[in-house]
Amino acid sequence: MKRIQPSYSSSRFERQLPLIGPEGQKKLENSTILIAGVGGLGSPAATYLALAGVGELIIVDDDRIQESNLNRQFLHAAASVGLQKVYSAEATLGSLAPDTSVVAYPGRIDEISADRLVADADVVIDALDNYESRFVLHEAAWNAEVPFIHGAVEGFSGQMTSIIPKKGPCLSCLIPAVPPSGKVPVIGATAGVIGSMQAMEAIKYLTGIGTMISGRLFLWDGQAGRSEFLHIGSRKNCPFCSKGRE
Image (cartoon, rainbow, N blue to C red; front, side, top):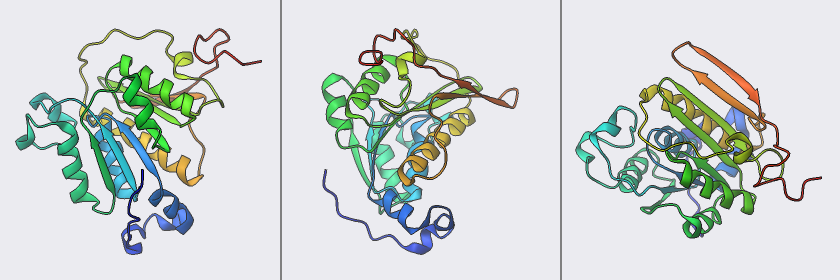
């Protein structure tokens, strides 16, 4: 997907340039990130990636804004209830970071759309709220060898990991079976913590700075004020990624 190269003001990024350098900033400017879901996780992830100077965001969501979304989905305002989320998010991101190109796709992720969307991406952010679409998107990213940054929240708790295709465990190694679907309670700040960490992972991957949370699962317990990491191993008989392994 071709886009016009933005002309970024160096003063806008003067607080992060000492950390990632001009070369890191240029890498962000030349990157395309697919964000699947612009709700609780997608709001902080998309916002911080746009503000960091990522050149292009592809945002995907087939849902419309409901009043019950507003405790955590801050890309959307109360006056936007009833509108399609991707267009509300596109407008908000455009006002926050006008140099970032935002491509809005108001459709559902399936086997056909997932392959097409992932083909243009350097990184995929999994900000979905259902596991059926999550596994479809993960398979497309794995096959295209595009990093897949998974996040999920419930209540005061959340989890996050980065899946680097062919270099570690896949999503099926972590989650062997699709959990039951349904609405779950969530504190907005929980989504803020996990979505922000997903943005951080994408920035680290694109700039080559820091250590990815790959092969590990970050668990956040906001109610107890505690976090921990669990090792994720590749399952020997994983039906998805075990083929071809020695």
